[in-house]
Every structure is written in C-alpha cells, then in structure tokens.
Amino acid sequence: MKKAALLAAGDSTRMMPLSANISKHLLPVAGEPLIFHTLKGLRDAGIKETLIVYGYRGEDLQDAIDSVDWKPMRISCILQKERKGTADAARYAKAFALDDDIILMNGDVLGGPGAFKGLIESHRKSKRSLTVTVKPVDDPSAYGIVVVKGKKAVDLIEKPKPEQMVSNLVNAGIYAAGSEIWDAIDKTQPSSRGELEITDSIKMLIDQGKVGVYELPSWWLDVGKPWDLLEANRLILNDATGYVSGEVEEGAVLKGEVFVEKGATIRSGSYIEGPVYIGAGSTIGPNCYLRAHTSVGKQVKIGNAVEIKNSIIMDGTNIGHLSYVGDSVIGCKVNFGAGTITANLRHDNKTVKVSVKGKRIDSGRRKMGAVIGDKVKTGIGTLIAPGIVLHQGSRTGVGVIVDKDVKPEKLVLTDQRKTVVDVLRE
Image 1 (cartoon, rainbow, N blue to C red):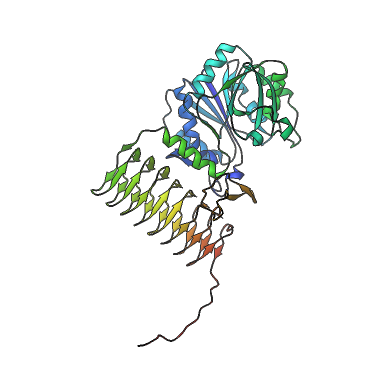
Image 2 (cartoon, rainbow, N blue to C red; image 1 turned 90 degrees about the horizontal axis):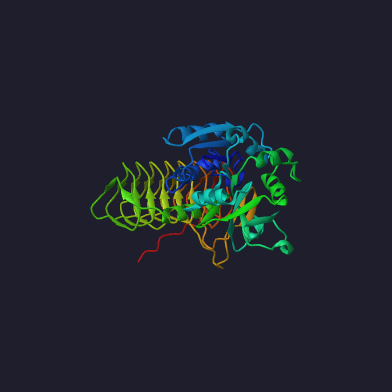
C-alpha cells in the first residue's frame, strides 16, 4: 500500500477563535502544524503518494505543505467545491486511488507510533475490502462504536444511545480501503443532517461481511476542540527527543527533553522543565519558569518572571513580565500586558466548561485555562477566569476581571468606584 488520502475540508468552526484566520489542520502542535505530524507518519510507514482533500482556507493549507520537502513522498491537493459530507470528500480520492488499496482518513485525527504500519500489515493479511481502526475508550458516547467479533466488524453505531453501548471500541477515523469503497460511496444517500457520511458507506460493507478491524497499538486522538490541541501537544512531546540549536545563556537551566530552535534565546535565570518546545527567533526570560508540555512558537517573547505551564503559545505573541499562563491556548500576535493571569482551576474542583460554537460544553479537564484568538491585547493586571474565550482582536483595559467570553473586536473596561480620602499624618 503506497497511497493515502486525508479528508481535511471541514470549516473548523469548533476550533474558533483559533481557526478564524487559519485552517485547524495548520494549528501548531509541538512546533509543527497538526497535519504535518500525520504526513510524517505516513511517509515513515512507506506511503509514496498522498492526496489532501481541502476546503476552508485551502490555499493557505496548500502553501504550507508546498513549503516543505516531503521526499520521497509526493503530496497533491484538491478542493472539495461544496461541503456535502465526508463520503463526498472521500469521492475526490477515487481517481487518485485507481484500483490500488489506499489509506483513507480524517485529517484531524492523530495516531501514535505504529498506527499506519500496523494498519497496512493487518489489511494485507486479512484480504478484506476494508479495515477499520478502533481504539478502546472509557466513554465512547461521543463517537461511533464498532461492534467486533473476532477480527471482523459486525456493526457500526454512530453516537450510540445508552442502551446501544455494546462496545467500548470507537471508530478511529483511519481506514485501509480497497476499490469496493468507491461503489459503496456512490450508493450512499444523504443522512438526516443532509450530508453524505463515510460511516454510512462503511456500514454497507460491514453488512456484507467485508470489513476487518485493527486496534491501534498506542495513543490516538480526535482533535476537534481547542483543548484537544493541548492533549495532542502533550502526547507528541512525550514521544520526542530534545535538541538545542539556539542560544542558552549561562545561568539558565534546561531539564529533560527541551527543544530550542535556531535563533531562539534562553536568557539567564530561566528554568525549563521538559518536554518543552521553543520556536525559532523566540526569546525566553530572563528569570522565567516554563513547565512541561509547553510549546512556544516562532518570534515569541516571554518576559521577565513569567510562568507558563502546559500551554501552546503561537507565533509572534508577547507575554509581558509577571504573567502566568496555565493550560491555555494562545493565538498569534497576542500581547499580554504585565501581570496578566489565566486561572486554570475552579474553586469547587469541577471540570471546566468552554464555549464551542456558542454553547458552553464540558471540556472534561479539571485544569483548563483560556482560549485566546489572534491579536488579542490585555491591559496590565488582567485576570482571566478558567475556560474563558477571548475572540480575535478583542482587548481588555487595566485591571479587568474577565469572567465571560469576549466577542471579536470588543474592548472590556472596568467600572470601578473610587474613594479619595486625606492622607493620615502623624
């Protein structure tokens, strides 16, 4: 198997405001765009040709991919002209695949070591029309579950009701497909949502007894919401080996796996506990504390006495001195005024809720800070409550407590009463 197709045409709305100016497939994880990690995995597994079916901000996606030498793998892109669903997106790969077997996958899922090589080998041995990857999870209610007998799929249930929870194996969104998948896609009818669903196409083949199952050997993640980026960042950094190509001043301490790219500077007094990634041209410190699973993009400035924990800081952002960033995702060209604090823990220790597409939903995370869009500016002394979203271009004044989401291009100011009294004299 030498070909793969990635379905990356989604509109990225669940990643807002981070995706306001960029496809979610290009959002940074451990120093690289999300989709690059998948492309590297495919190349390492021996894939020679990859097709990306793109949609939202597709030209930017193609430009980013074209900027990298992927040899010996060749990458091509094609636009899904109308968003009619995942089966319609997959249909764009039919001419690319011809009669060859192909890896067909969602562009926003990540698989750990061994995912692709193991799938290819399992599919080759089974000689089935399709092989579905699965992963056991504690709560499969938000996914499609696969019912398995032996190594054969016998049912696929999308977003099962409580009485349908007959399996904890979820559909991981990565498939090895033969040519029969295209006939199934051609026969697929619109779902209740009015879309052509690839899972309906797969269900046809399952009903015909033609689908095998491969359980992924290591971690797997469906990256759909902002906090999923933090988990992806953690998983990828944990598997990586650090290096130092930039400047580390005397008096700075680096522990564990720390990545310092060329042109980055770690100033004296900084203490960095890996795994931590620091991008090209960034300046850290002096006297900063960067804790594990932090990823700092390119041309970022982290000021004096700043602490950052388990966060993603994107390109061109400035975190002013005496600030704290915990369990947060910070967009590009953000400016944090001195003393800006992102709270990441509720007093009642309950999991933090975050707004996605206008609705507050449970992140499932006990510690979750802020989601900050591009070009946000905070005044000095701004305090941000757990799970708050500041949309692109928004601003805060001096000493503002932000306990509600801030819409794009809005300025939040304090309304503070003051009392002036005479100075007491001895």
